[in-house]
Length: 136
Image (cartoon, rainbow, N blue to C red; front, side):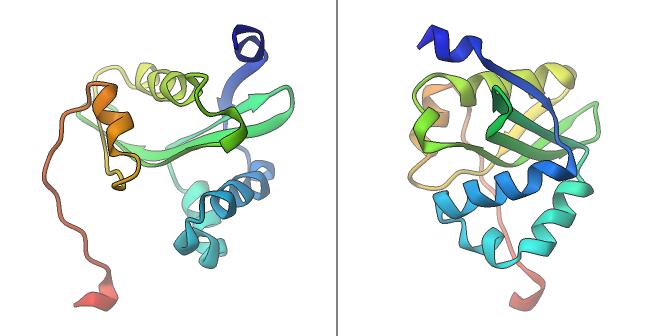
């Protein structure tokens, strides 16, 4: 495990990374992001929190979000390739991003299948709402 983690590094997202991220979205069956491929690519280009995790030169994970740099750091998506899960890479990526914006509180939404992971990382639950324009 440690030898694998030694080869992992984090860096800022570049447009060339998007196809790898798109493949991760397909793998995770995040169908809304997959179907809205161009919108998702635009979201990456317009997010001020956009980093990837790489094993050698291969993108194996990513994190995208928005922040004001002082109070709020909202994580929109974080994903790790299924072949690299269980190594602590997701946790390290979250910590890496939070260290980039140390004055902020990190907030994120989870699915029912991922909520236990965040609870185990001592994230506190909070109540929120969501609505698309089409739902008005």
